[in-house]
Image 1 (cartoon, one colour):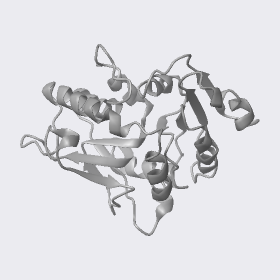
Image 2 (cartoon, helix red, strand yellow; image 1 turned 120 degrees about the vertical axis):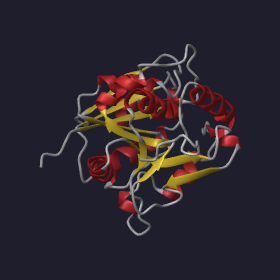
Image 3 (tube, one colour; image 1 turned 135 degrees about the horizontal axis):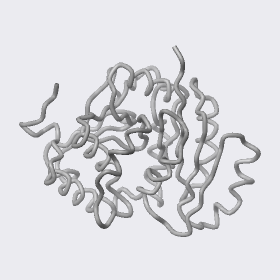
Image 4 (spheres, helix red, strand yellow; image 1 turned 180 degrees about the vertical axis):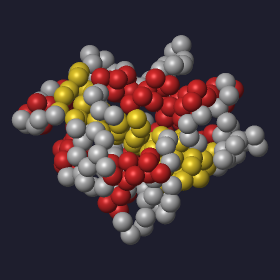
Length: 254
């Protein structure tokens, strides 16, 4: 069976120190990515020497924005990728060495959007209510269906047509892209969102290394805390427009 091509989208903003770790993890994947696209999300001085940081690496392209366009821009950049599949990875996320292989085998078993951390909301109250997280911080032995995924997104490039088919008049700068992707896939194509297996004793399959994810995701560059009100607001808008959460009595789990 031919191995499909996979393009990686990385985001450079305030964590240039994680880029080498990410590139090393990607270089050593059991399924090698066909290209790596690095989105520089403003003219941050710490990324001025990015060419020096990357060195003479083939298959790595960079694009630089003169301003911070937030978390959505990388999904526009992904339109420029050349592969059958795309994997967008947060800058605080270092994947295990069989992450792409895990995503691809899971996709073949159950087509859909995949990520390394999944959330099931108990209601449209979203992050202010109770949620169940599945993935690197709550390992799962089998493919699990969830409402949304984050930290890493693996999908066929053609799914981007649904992401950009509908979008808010004013795009939230620091939040909402994860909710939006699952919402538009469900609404326009009936496509579900999943987390591939994260077996306790096989961390190479995981989409993020827990110790590093906890350390990097909780540093001063993290957006989660101040972005929660925006996340809740955008989730509410999507639910109002037809996004069915798994807790909804009308949700079709089949």
